[in-house]
Every structure is written in structure tokens, then in C-alpha cells.
Length: 513
Ligand code: 3SK
Image (cartoon, rainbow, N blue to C red; front, side, top):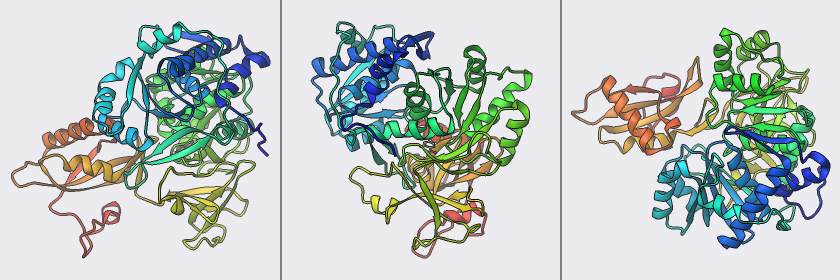
């Protein structure tokens, strides 16, 4: 079991407790040209925590939004807020004001901590939000020249962290779901340790000698676990990259002798392409792939080219992190592996009856962490009879291994990002040239899946390359740019049911209207 004391603060466990356990001089975080030890991280977070409570009057249970690219300052803000008993929503730099407003309102955010380089959209969002919220800047490069840094600098390194209960909410994870209406998952302090004590311990066997590298944003629980919680739980080091290009990932592995990498399959593919001029990956112990299923050929090419193990796993924001995974030494192509210790998984039909081995059905999982949506009717769809239905279709083979079949809903998973088709449609429809549209995911050699928009133009609007570019730029300006449709198909009409519902499955399967 995962037994933790009744009073547990994950921010304290990952900083002060590590110093007490003798890791004070170990490197904890590397980024923006600096290394920070566990002792420095403990002091840094204690100072910020005091600024949050003393200068901004925040109280335990208040909610804080953090807006930043992956860097040590973002991790410090997250840990400090957690130490102060605050509930954190981490957000990606790519979010636009409209998306930030939805986040502020849904999560009832009291204070936004924002990298000063990303202030514009944040300030607009805070002004336009119906929920009153304050925006404080911090310097992502950690040179102490922004407001939060100045406030923190004057504080003592001694701080009595808030005594939170192990079942107190520490983190709110946003997931946009197939409809594009955000769902918020609540995670407790203990959940944030369980993911380390389950996946990082059992599958990766992390030691203080490990050095982590990866690309997923800390705003996704995949990134927060892989690039902050997992290393910090075991006295290891995390390298944080504001822009994790494939070439940069390779450079970091070579420079810092990184041992564990975290990214999505498309990035592993891109790394292999970037490696063609030669790369020294000898330090790497294991590559972790998640975010979307790892195609068999990518698995095989990785092993052939690098000689290093790559393990595929499936996780979900609702479940906080990976719950079914391959193991080092027991990792096969086109296979997601077996549940982690403490988790159970089955494949069921719509009535929750288990289907025969080898038959495709819905993945149902239960374990020490489960979905808890914040005030959302969709809770009953995700959790049925105590099982979490992740929205993925799987088979289980005779030997108990799980194999991914498809996403069960309309969510498009592209290059590791979850993109809700309806949200892209809504953005397109804001353009005067778009009469109707339907957005689907289509297979793409390089990215696995890309967003494709089928568009009916208004009278007088001209099809062609210029229109494609205009609509793509328009979407990038309205919502986070990574959601833009990489492919646009112009059409006279969209396939619809009698009652007028668009039949996206016909577009996906190339069926006649
Ligand atoms: O959403 C995912 O795909 C995921 C994968 C691994 C860990 C965490 C998450 C949210």
C-alpha cells in the first residue's frame, strides 16, 4: 500500500525533507544556465511561500494559477504555493487570454503568478475575467528583478509550512475533454507522492544519480511528474528546458549525462532524425514514452538506433500519471504493458461487462488514484462502479498485456497534446470566411495524428493556399497555437444526420456524405 502520515505536504516532502535526509548538496534543478541544490530549492521556496502569505494575504485552500514555460522558477513557485497550503493550477505559456479567463473562472483563482515574459495575455485575462484575481510577475530566468522575486528576497529562509492533510487538494489539473468544455481534476497531496512511489520507483527505480530531461510542459501532469516530482522525490536532478527541441534534448543528454527522458512518440521520432549526424546517448538508462500510443515502428527504430530501452505507458490527467506501463527488460512494440502494482485494469463493454481476451473494449482502471472532477456532471461517465473509464479502447492479450486500439471519443491527440475538435471549430467559425466546419484527427507520418479541418466557405470567399494560411493564422491568434489545423480541406457541404448533427466519423473514414 501507499501509506503516508495523516499530515502531509508534498512541497515539504520534495524540498525540506530531502535536505533533512542528506540530499542538501545534491543538484535538484538545472535550467536557464544555473544549477540549484536541494538546500537552495528549500530556501528559495520558503521565501516565496512567505511572500505569498505575508505580502499577498493568501490563505490555505486559496487557488493560484502559474503561467510559465518549464524552468526552475516555475517549479519553485509551484512548490512554494504548495508549502503554503495553496491549490495550484499550472498553465502552459501558449494559452491565450480567452483560455486563461475560462481557467480563472472555473478554478476561482485568487492570484496568478506569471513569468514577466508572458504578462500580456495574463493581464488581459485577469481584467476581463468575472472572477477578481491579481497578477504578480516573477522572473522565469530567476534574476530577482520581478515583483515576486523582490518580495521573496527579503524573507527568511525559515518557514513553517502549512500542515496540510494527506487528502487535502493540492493540484487542479485541466483537461479539455472531447467537447472542449474544460474539466478539472482534483488531486490530493498524497496523490502527488503516489505517482513517484508507484511509477518512478517501480518502473524506473530512480536513484540520486539520475538526471531527467524531457519536453512535456509542467502544466501537464505528465510533465509535472516526469520533470519535477519523480526526480525530487529521490534526490535526483531535473533539467528544465523552456523550449525542448529534439536537438536541444540530445544536447542536454550529452552535456548533463541525462539518464531518463520523458517525451511523446513524435518527439522520439524527431530526436532520431536529429541524431543522424551522430549523438552520444550512452548515459541514457531509459526513454519513457506517453501522451499518445507509441507506434511499433518507432519503438523498433529507437531500440535499433540507440540500443536503449524505450517504455510505453498510458496515463491520464484524471489518473494524474501513468497507470499501465511496460517495464525495463519487459517492453514490447505495440504494447502498453501491464498495470502498475496497486492498479487493476480490465477491458469492458458499454454495460461494464468484461470482454473476452483479445476483444476490443473500453479500458477500465482502478487504483490508489482515481478521477475526481471539480463540480462536474461528467464524473458519473468517467467513474462507473468504481472503475475509471479513460476514454480509450484497448485489448488485453492472453498473457495479461494491454494493447491500445483507439481513443473512444473525438479527442484529437497530436504530438502529445490533447486537442478538442469542437474548440478548433469554434475558433474557425469566428472567421468571416467560414460558413461551416468540422474538425477531425487524421494520421500523419511525422506527428502520428494531426488536426484537419473540413471547411465550407461563405459565398465570395476564395479557396486556395492564401485562405489556408489566413485560417491557420486566425486559429493561432484565437486559441493556443498548437491547436491550429495543419490540414484544411475545402468542401461544398458537410455530412450531417437528419437532425443536422455533423457526422465527423464519415469524414474520418472518408465515407460519402
Ligand atoms: O494524458 C496523458 O496522456 C498522460 C500520460 C502520462 C502521464 C500523464 C498524462 C496526463
